[in-house]
Image 1 (cartoon, rainbow, N blue to C red):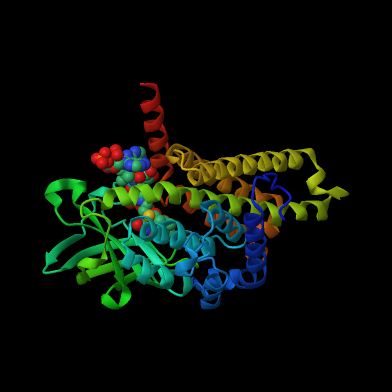
Image 2: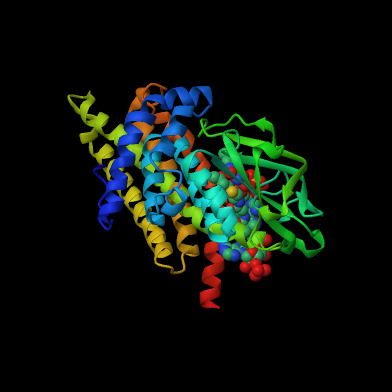
Amino acid sequence: ESGLNSLDTFTDEEQMLRETVQRFAQDVVAPKVREMDENEMMDPAVVKGLFEQGLMGIETPADFGGSESSFTSAIIAIEELAKVDPSVSVMCDVHNTLVNTVIRKYGTKEQHEKFLPLLAESQVGSFCLSEPASGSDAFALQTRAKKDGDDWIINGSKMWITNSYEANVFLIFANVDPSKGYKGITCFLATKDMGIQIAKKEQKLGIRASSTCTLNFDDLRVPGANVVGEVGKGYKIAIEILNEGRIGIAAQMLGLAQGAFDKAVPYTYERKQFGQPVGTFQGMQFQIAQAAIDIESARLLTYNAARRKDEGRDFTKEAAMAKYWASVVAQRVAGNAIEWAGGVGFTRETGIEKYWRDSKIGAIYEGTSNIQLQTIAKAIQKQYS
Ligand code: CAA
Ligand code: FAD
């Protein structure tokens, strides 16, 4: 148990899950972290482990092979994995909070029966919204879908797609009627064997073990039964799910900050300069105390948003606040952690520098920090004008 985790509002089931994930992260993930970062590749044994531990169907009903737990449970798992490896954490995050949730919430009975067990037991999922020319302006997407008998033919390209190197199941957002603007956007379920091609795998600053690819769809034929939700309502599916997903990224950044703190702080009490542990100099103590406040505030925002979601209350503004703030905290704490460890913090050996590299993505994906601020500002305006 991390020394800074002062929040004790978790159920016994949630607490047990936290301990299970901690054990998995220490035993299975930790020994592979450096190798996966250097190889820029997720270890298949880690992916297999995520499935075996029930971490790829956290909220999925038991009838479909899932753990049937709360959204907060998914957030706990994402946080705990990020303490050890933010790449493994984002794999679990996208798979659960984006892919599984879209199918669970908007899918037909047939889609539930066909895809939820696969996603809980063995097949990785991807969420394909962003494109080369549409990131923040996501609803301006250029991928098109045309009806052909009962099928749909998809043409276009998606960029930055997490998990796509390992994935078999893809949620694809395409516009079926651009004359309707974003009200033509529709969500499709596709599988790799339908002909999805990986055009490029990115080399990145951080979360290097997490795959991020460009995908090309060249007359990709998808059966009519694979439309998720209503035709033309894909934009609403995308943003409603992203509102939730952003709490997952907040949890990833929270776990990352805590992981960096847990690695660097003990070192400051071992390392002696001027005859005393460096962590006992006031200049160091105050930085460590401030980092603890930062982490605590990110934790409260993150779990507040998660609980609001579980309780069926509004959470969009709270989720945006949590993601925004946890990203600031992660970058600040991980940056300081390197300095607290001095020269050794700057080397690959301690693993501290990796947290800082991994922290940078928090302000970019699932809506940049400016997009979170815009979301918060819109909610304030609605309330006050
Ligand atoms: N919640 C619910 N609905 C929302 C919403 C929100 N936060 N923001 C906008 N909408 C709805 C509006 O109500 C409106 O719908 P109606 O016409 O039915 O009323 C519609 O969306 C358009 O609204 P706007 O004109 O205000 O929106 P916009 O076009 O200016 O931008 C946006 C909307 C694309 C959602 C933008 O705010 C946004 O969030 N951009 C970031 C995109 C993003 O998060 N991408 C993440 C990709 S996945 C990913 O990144 C995964 C990963 O890395 C791990
Ligand atoms: P842009 O939208 O071009 O933004 C550039 C800058 O302009 C940013 O600082 C932004 O804040 C600012 N800006 C843009 N619009 C405004 C505005 N209106 N007001 C103020 N500032 C603004 N997408 C998926 O669909 N699925 C995934 O699985 C996925 N995984 C990803 C993994 C990684 C590692 C990365 C890097 C990206 C991933 N993305 C994914 C895409 C991600 O969601 C986008 O990168 C993100 O939404 C930003 O879009 P962009 O990169 O085009 O930046």
